[in-house]
Image (cartoon, rainbow, N blue to C red):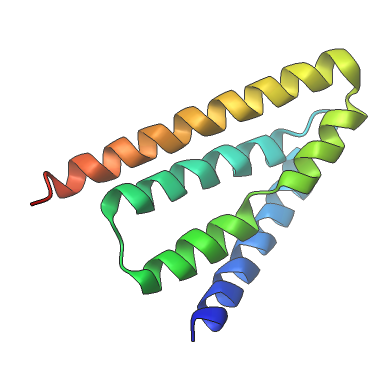
Length: 115
């Protein structure tokens, strides 16, 4: 059952990533940047909320795993060249880490102190 949850979430996340990249990536990979930041925030939120295993495998591992992309990020960073690629890499990593932390903070604040 876990494999099916991950596969379903991954299919949905991958399709959304493709749609965002197709619509927003042209000269600069804005779509890939957006899905990486949004996926990081969502994963942080899920962890902060302490969702059960079913939701985590469907949404965290599957959807967020399919939505975010390391391979496209790496390829686009290289394609952009040393100056713009470095800026893109730093922006992606910094924003994604901040988004994940904010998502975790929001989820943790929502559920309140754990006993």
